Length: 375
Image (cartoon, rainbow, N blue to C red; front, side, top):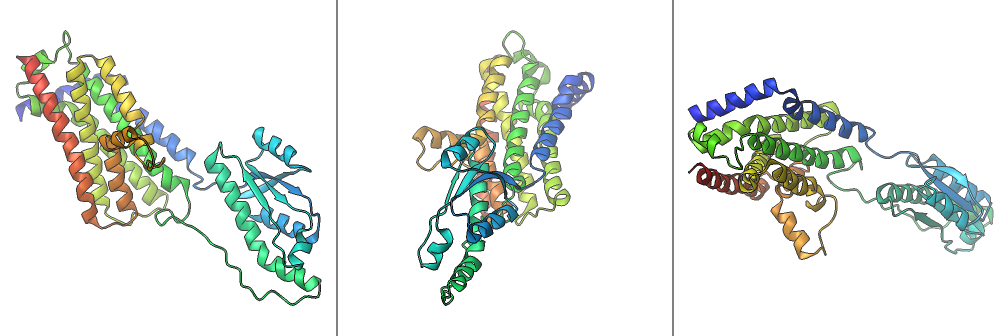
């Protein structure tokens, strides 16, 4: 306990003196989380610009145009005569996609044909492009039922008895299709993961003397309690910021956690404690602060891309799947996503055990290396 208290007190005194290191725990995380919140404040995309090519120029096509422009996801930014002109608008970034209404659209409906309305979107910007296409498609489907009846009645034909149903695919854990709820809950732990990794490595790296932690270990007495005391401010700061963000998106923004909030908080604490243990191992192994920071930037900075939450790993290379399983963020996001969606609390035990392993295994290896350097 004396080693723990001494190390903790020394670290707190250092933070009180060094405003830049203190900013790494306070100002920088606050700024990053503010930027994340600002990016996703709107939640869902609205009024995405699209181009329309109307080759029919009939009352039927005008009805569809009104339905498209009234849809909340899209608005008609321009009308063009050909697909080549519409593609040029998309390439210039003036629109996310275009809708092509074919010739004889209304007459085709009256003759029991199925006119093909083409919707093309910019796949280079997959999120906005697919949202624009989805909004335009929903508007067309919504207008289709009344349009069929109007066209048949206008041609003195009986109404089509076929009932048409719109199919809506909604993720169960993101019913509002909100980018705020989906992406921010993935990005904020990834950002805090990187902050915890870097600040922990910097804290222990300050104790290197002649490429060794031996002097610090000798002064501290007992290595394990001293490591806990040294890294506790950084683990605690990341955990508190994680709790603050969770309170913001739930109490402040109105989203609801269907599972256990306590399980998410416990998982966060283990996650950032494991991150600090990995940083301690990197400093003890490389004996260079710069190298340890570089490795932290590589593994923590790229963790979200390999965690399987934003980009699917099905069909990925063996190395990609292996690297995903190695990263602590993968297991924390499995726990968090399950609890946000309301999974049974029993499902937290595999990721909890994995996160605990990140505390024990790198921590034990760091202890062995520091003890050897002390000798």
